[in-house]
Length: 360
Image 1: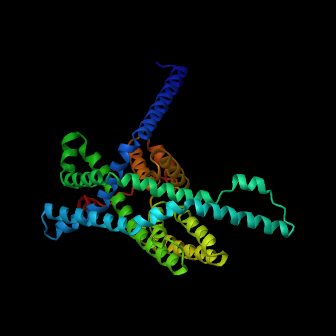
Image 2 (image 1 turned 120 degrees about the vertical axis):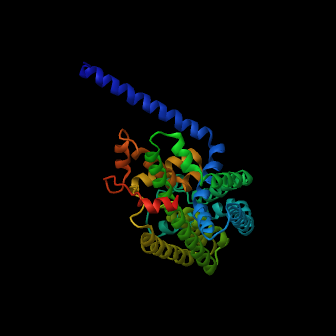
Image 3 (image 1 turned 60 degrees about the horizontal axis):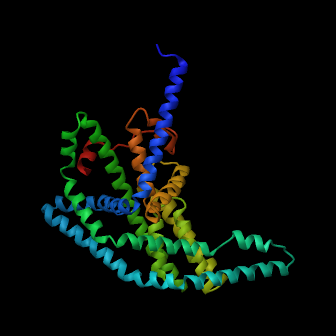
């Protein structure tokens, strides 16, 4: 019989080995980010386009023709977006030092105005720790990171094609590979259905959010309205705080370029857009949501952004959903899935069998 002290040591060893293995995995993911990021992006593009492929097949189109139409539409969309915002990204990056200098000047003027009214401000301390230009730098880093990823556009498109070609036969392969294939198939169908629903709805709402942001900034007269629309579209994938982050550089640029009142109008416009999209339209179609707590969403944003860069931030929620579903599939790790859940009680969100089979 094993003594309590021996069992405690064994538990400590297992925890230590698990932590060490986890650190090795994280370090490996970060080291292989240049290789993994295009693959992850291709995977989630394939997730978004799979329902379209299935819809075309249900309309009687053969597999090769449906896939050809999906790929042509995908490449055409990327080309159109690149043509529309490519020059704006280049011009904005070139003008970034000028915008930062003007923001610094406006901050000095604000400090001087406060001092003139007898409000003492620790100017040196604020100048050291408050840097509004960091928001502009963040925008530049995000678009530079996306630009670096899109240099592998051919690899991404090719990977999407292969993933779409495998979706039809994957369930049969899974049944042949595992003895308890039904359990694994249910888990795969759960993840596929949940992720497809989230990505399709989120992409549609993000497109509408980006369009509204473009119209707002164009109407106010801010430079690069298409750029701010694209930023709103991308950051809307980050729940809770993404839309706020996307609004900050546009408001700062409005302040530098047009003054205080237009900046205030821009901020109010973004608040209205985010309230309507995030609190009215999205909950109506998203249902009960992702089942992830707000803290987990924020920590996943920081973690995946650190591991994979800007693309990791945009894909942080789908990646965390995948981790949560994987953890919930095992009795030994289900407690971690419960801790990640927004309601504190892990409940299966699996769709009905008929629905799951149709989606897969």
